[in-house]
Image (tube, rainbow, N blue to C red; front, side, top):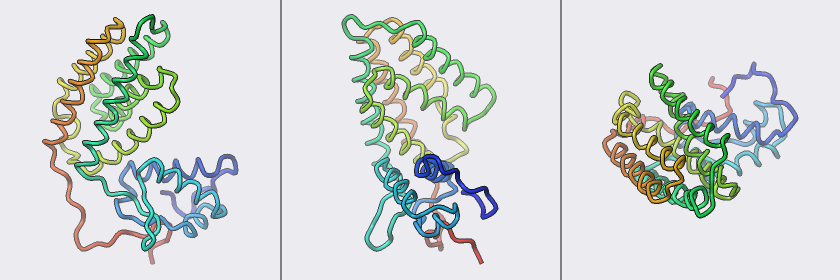
Length: 243
């Protein structure tokens, strides 16, 4: 979230810019679970009408990271352990389906597609070597999104993007001292197995690699201590300057 001194949002694609600002705040943890998102306050802060703000909030609700109630209005969602298991289930199903397209009969990745996959995984290694956890998480998700995007199925891509957004939000509730470093070697090996299978266009090996990756992800997630919410505080009202 910005301050009242921030420049006004540009007039082009207002709702998308507002949605991205809010999404970044949610993913970073600046907007905590349960925080209220007040349309009038957000519109005033950014110097825009309420229409684009409403569109942005609707987009984020469709994405699954905020929700609306009659009593509270729109609030930042509160992820649960069950949510994460369901997210993994959807992502695994989508990536498995992607294999049918990318490794199916007559399918062959182009030279540029193979390079994009390989380069993305190389970037993940470099981020880990630098100790840049934030970049590593983004690159990790980008690798999985790229696999789905390469199918050319826009609906697969849109659903997977929403799942990754929810998955990113969930990471903020896990212990930052040990996630995602725990199990790095296993995580890295499962990514490499996925890549190797795609490059070889080996559907059976790809399916096995995807299954192993998400089995490992579930196991690592179950080991994490969920960071407890702050006690004695009520969800904030976003968009209002503190007195």
